[in-house]
Image 1 (cartoon, rainbow, N blue to C red):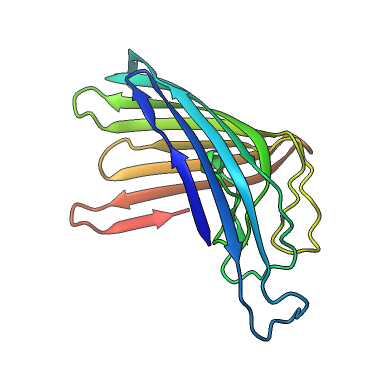
Image 2 (image 1 turned 120 degrees about the horizontal axis):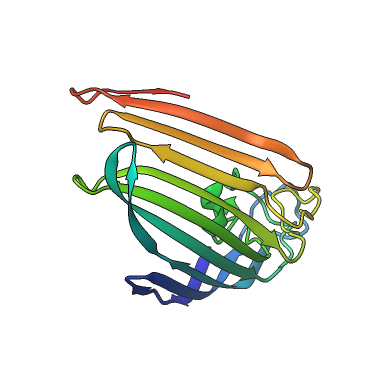
Length: 217
């Protein structure tokens, strides 16, 4: 697997902008592969992305405490060319489970056996609450969705159909830390294409003063 490109991070107090351009390629030299038609398969594609966000903040109260609230809208455009990869093996790759953080990744696969095609725009927003006395983050909540401008043809298995949905599920994520011992986390996926909940998850974590950690989800 090879990757070559340029990335420029521009940051200001009120926001950021990160353009990226790179070329990704993967190639193989196989021995005794189950499909001996091509022992040296490979693929490559040009990828470009533009990631930008803004930061707004205000003073408010949360459960009687003085806090700073932020509002952080974010947009991420991703384009990656298509190259046939059905003849390539899959040694360590998998299709990633969708979540809010998947909105801003440049691939939908783990590993390097697949170079996915993409033409999509992710829109999301996060709000955080920081305690003014300690500076610690008390609460954060995020929601967002991907809008696809074309079908995604590269799949892990050659027999899998192209992904044709025009939008991703709406992904939401929230974390509440009322004190240093407790943390509550919840996430939700709602598919607007068939009006169903794809997944819902909740977890509570407790850390004892001695450093032991207990999780239930």
